[in-house]
Length: 451
Image (cartoon, helix red, strand yellow):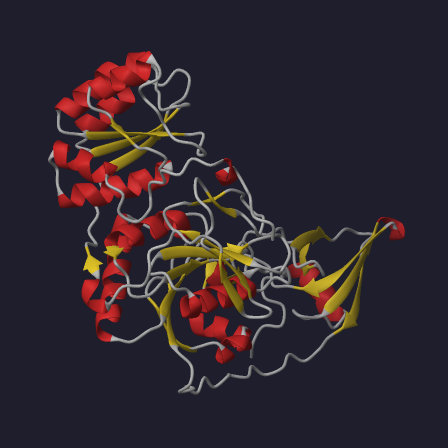
């Protein structure tokens, strides 16, 4: 028989049992002579919790631990019998297009694991479809879980496996578009990787995530996921994009070019923003409307035009310039056999002059060095100041207006094709998927669109 009070032991368990409490019951805890009253759903305890703490899920969706003292009273307000899960049968509808959903993990496919108290990736894309029945009126969903990891565990190897899987599906199947469920923290890296690995796409590849897990009332998973599927069906472009909340409210989503997007906030639902570019589209998931707002996009190509170059060099480093930067960091990377270094420099693309000899040594050793700016908005111009000109003279490759992480992914991709530094420079300066924007308009800084 399933334990009604998992994680609870000793006197606290005896107290809860005497009140007829079990996990899922709504209880009221009163402390300090009635000065503090807390109500919520009784939740399982994780393995590292104090034996004197009760875990409650509050009405706002957050979990808290409440210490039970001698003056604490517990009252059971309600205990409902949980309904049996109903499985939605996703019978194919011949009038609707097919969208392939690939799960890789992340918060959009996560729920709380109460044995440890952590948020773990454990919900498959099929589970998300069941949570969003509106999807059945938009597309036929075919799904699979390729990885089940949090995004901080993504590596260039995972990018390659994901790209190869999508390329195989594009070649052998007929999907209107692809949706990749991904953790938000490194989503922009994977989006850039897929954009370089799979070019001249016959359909969009839409990465989607959530800032708040699916078991919370404030989750953004449903709106983001529905918007991503609408994008996969209706978008006229063949690009890799990121689709996430446009505002903190559940109203609109924005579709960002995968090589021009960054997560700009750790927890807000509208954390993603296009940098040095305009969003490609906006989506109203309520009315199921899709609207292009940036006509500078790459149109869908034919299957025969698909270019697949999925390999990446994992010996590339991304480092940040700062006051007092130690030149031996560059020396260490060279001595450890790294093939490429991307520097997130200051201003127009600088690093302290004392580092230049180490950078020169790196380049003479066959290491490609690319300069970007930590200001994010704007572009580097290494011809303005002496430091920049010296860096150019020793062979540093200017990163134009590419985000540091995009330049890092691109260099990793380029070095998997060639190690010849002249060819590396040519490829880094070549604009493959609109990762470089030569448009200079004030509208690109920082938000321009009225939502």
